[in-house]
Image (cartoon, rainbow, N blue to C red; front, top):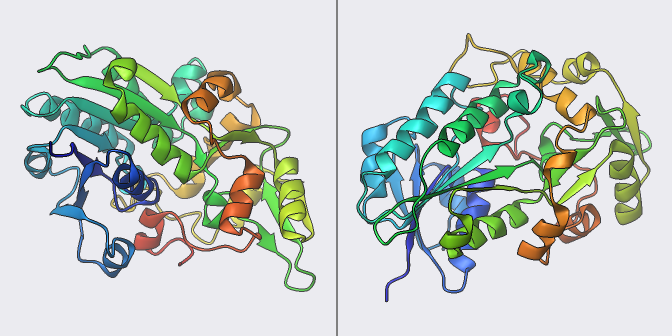
Length: 342
């Protein structure tokens, strides 16, 4: 019997590529198709060397191409990019792709890679109105109003809510500053005593596979994923212990954090140069971590039941050899020229 084909939308990004690898390594393995705007780019070609992946060229906003890419697929993993398109387009893309999915005869499982709906969790307080989270969050609400069928001809939907990546410590919003004189790693973050729900890319891939492997269990369900919750102090203490370096946590204001970014005033969505800036977007993002609003949403015992090998911060640092040195991670920002290069 042929393996089930999964279309991964966003498969050339950090999260999507981890899902692609997990699907290929599953037992039994899935067949993987990836939608990419530029499958011939050096980044994609070098990243996917040797992997048995089929590419379809196109954007997730090109719905005719999405429909063509979905043909003959059993499932789709939808990870739209809020650092490429704006909040309104990301909402429209999630809804429209789900509508199209319902018309594909072979499709049985629609998995939406999302982020918690911060506004809804906080009574729609604009303090928590980060665009790259709430665009996806609104798609969550839409999906929850739709039926989810496990019949032989029906379509199941599942939401996978992720957190920040541990890999963002390499080059995302949590990157450490290294003193050129004594090598001290400083995590200068506007976190206070708050908790960050980190998830490793490896764990996210495992969760995606578990969902596709058990359609009955995950029909109409939301999995709020994380690998561990971590404070700023724990970040520094763990790095110091693992890498044998001096590391400290410094609580700063959001303005101080943003002022240190060379691309703070660049558009957060690279295709919309006149849109909201990185500074404006993340000013509404950090308060969620400062106030630990996601702490009650994660059932860590359940997550360990689903994934017994759930990674700890220390385990991740040791596995990847993290010592506080930065490198590029967020593909959208790298492509737009506003982030650190690999």
